[in-house]
Amino acid sequence: MATVTKVIEVSSASKKGIDEAVQGGLKKVAKSVKHIKGAWVNDIKVLCEDDGTITEWRVNMRVSFVVT
Image (cartoon, rainbow, N blue to C red; front, top):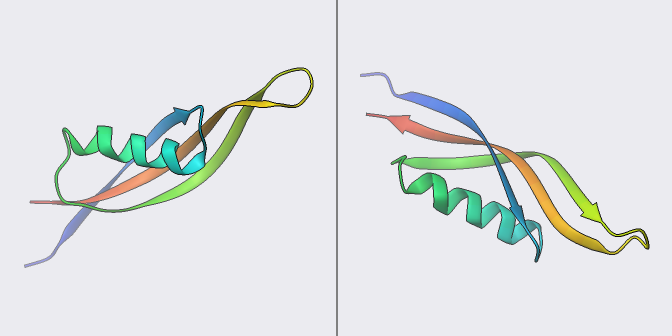
């Protein structure tokens, strides 16, 4: 039997860093999607103050999971 994998696109944000943005996004997705196999971060953005201080990290990622 063939395995089918679906990919969804997710955006997530964190004030602490990229790692927390990715982890937070994956944990939120895992509440409603089972069998997550991986994620590709395809975009990283930051919000910053006038002096260049980063105030928020944002990631867009594609999450893949097996369809059962």
